[in-house]
Image 1 (cartoon, protein in one colour):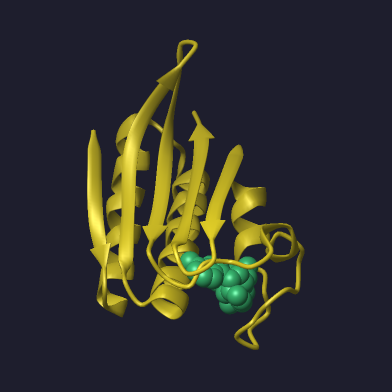
Image 2: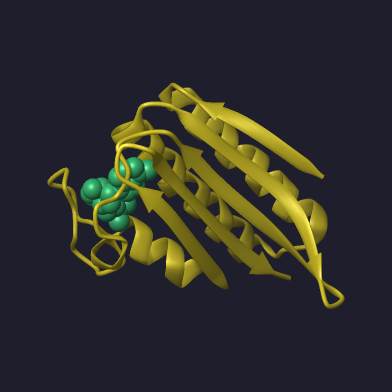
Length: 130
Ligand SMILES: Nc1ncnc2c1ncn2[C@@H]1O[C@H](COP(=O)(O)OP(=O)(O)OP(=O)(O)O)[C@@H](O)[C@H]1O
Ligand SMILES: [Mg+2]
């Protein structure tokens, strides 16, 4: 399964979160991991909304070496991130927030890849294995 949610309003963040939680449940994640996945989707969608205004969240089932998991891809064509390493440190924020979003996402998932180019946009792809 694969579904893409356009993020343009705060309501879309809630929708993406719920779709993610349901998919996680369907493939067999326990309630704790369903909540972790929902949190990750919220954080990534909120970053799209705050920093890029619009973008997409794609939620898909993935399989590799006999393992099953869920991949979440957050993509936007916003301003991009100047220093990807810096934003992975706790406490880095350009919006006066606590800057725990991306480091938290990394801790909750099994892997994270961030591609970002200034003025081009940002793609964050994370995976969690069952
Ligand atoms: N999609 C994005 N486009 C452009 N910049 C981004 C994007 N996502 C994150 N950033 C940049 O990375 C910084 C760190 O993001 P992170 O989510 O970790 O913290 P935050 O959003 O500042 O605070 P918090 O998520 O804790 O409320 C942001 O302050 C912003 O500068
Ligand atoms: Mg954030």
